[in-house]
Image (cartoon, rainbow, N blue to C red; front, side, top):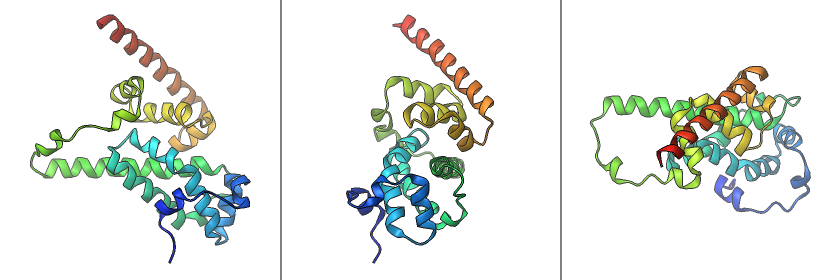
Length: 193
């Protein structure tokens, strides 16, 4: 039987795969080499999960992280070997997160209010500093995603632009405006204290 994704994450990479770039591993995965895809999962599980925590509560982010890698595995043949792998993977994660948010909104519109949701503590922000919490609350989803991808996940402007399906200049402007807004909000918070 094939190992579960969580088992793959815990395994230390002991092969020569750990020194290969993502694009080479994705190419090997396209040719059916499961250990190459396992290495991609091991490398990027935590980063994808951190990114998704910006959109979703902890339990949902774990589920969507797993779905991201399952979808990537099923669609690996559609990956273009001439492009960077990580933006492709983050694009899958972002689209699944947005689908999950839409699905949850529809469920809330149909169901009766549930007081149990208020009783559960919000552990999501424990993993982020107050500035990330402020960014999530005050910025648009795209602006927040751009900040997370560029500063927390260390993706280039070009890679962020690909994930968000925007141009490089538009992404730079979005990042600039988001930083400016956060600076303004931060100053307001300081003056309120």
